[in-house]
Amino acid sequence: MVRVTGCRLPPAPEDTGFRLAVIMKTITDDDIDRVALDLDSTLAATSLTAFELLGTPEYTYDDIESWSWGLNKFGKERYLNAMWHAWTIRPTDVPVMEAGLPETVSEMRDHATVDVVTAHPENEAISNGKKQWLDHIGIGYNDFVPVTSGKAELGYDAYVDDKPALPGEVAEKNPEATSFVIDHQYNQNIEAPHVRVGGVSNTI
Ligand SMILES: [Mg+2]
Image (spheres, rainbow, N blue to C red):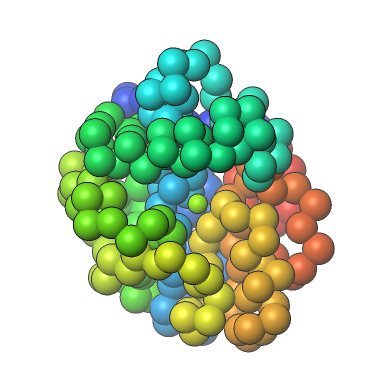
């Protein structure tokens, strides 16, 4: 089983659309009209650029053991600064999480409205960096929706995200919605209903 942990171009052809393609099948089969597609660590391997900015380029997603790992390892302010600076300083250097994203998201949009819904501090430069990256990679989307707090209450039919707490928030505030979780080491052991996609522990 191929496990994509963030790759620089060019990706291996067999990896193309590996993870999001699985989601697309469900979107096609079910009545999912509006999708909230996360950006950081779902589409974009932001942490890899952050690790370079932190002076530790040897780290990869395989090193991120838990949601709080980076905060503990580098200190909250330093780690988050690196994450946000990736977008303000080096937006077009951020690698993709998987190959074939422009084609996969485009096909997804044949079946649903797909908004990029992404959390970061209120900051125009971060939003601009992320939009620049989407254009640079060639990923189309409907709306770009930056948020500073929860996504669950936004009322989407489906969420595609790597954050381990999101399925629980969706179950509480928007129980009809489907939570797709992009498989990472740091988001195992989610109790709320979700569909895990990608990686060796893919349960589909
Ligand atoms: Mg994310």
